[in-house]
Amino acid sequence: MKLVEDTVESYRKADSTIKRLLKEMDELMDNINIFNLNSEDVQKYFTLYKAKLRLEEAYSSIVDLNKEIQLEGYLRKNNRGRYELNGFELTSGGLIDIWRDDPEMKDGGYYVPSRIEHHATDYYCVDMPEAMLEGLKARNRVSPLSN
Image (cartoon, rainbow, N blue to C red):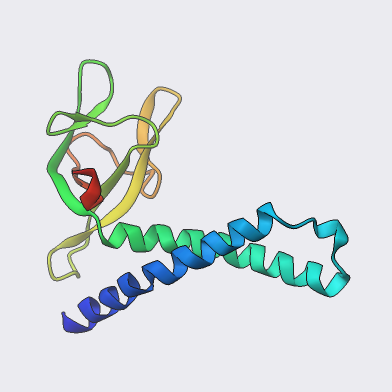
């Protein structure tokens, strides 16, 4: 859909501006002693800091838009007790897109960006903790520079 692609492109264009703002905030944090600021400047500093945290999250999402599909298939548990996607072993913190069935969607479902974590005796998907991973459709995406 053109509207989706146009919006994605707008976000991609914002990438460099957000990187610059994050760098400026890092420099500010490295070079300022907030104890020497007046109360108004301290308030501005903390507002900027909160904005920085949200910008980091936004930037991460923009980077995610640029990732390319590397592997696609079904999760299987290997003999080491870890899940694999076409031979690629996932461990705690491993980023993965998990398929969520939804008959109301045009394609019968959609991918949910998430990560794999371990708890007690098995692994689970953070954004779909109820999902049984064995046999679940999934894909792994990487940034173009990682290929």
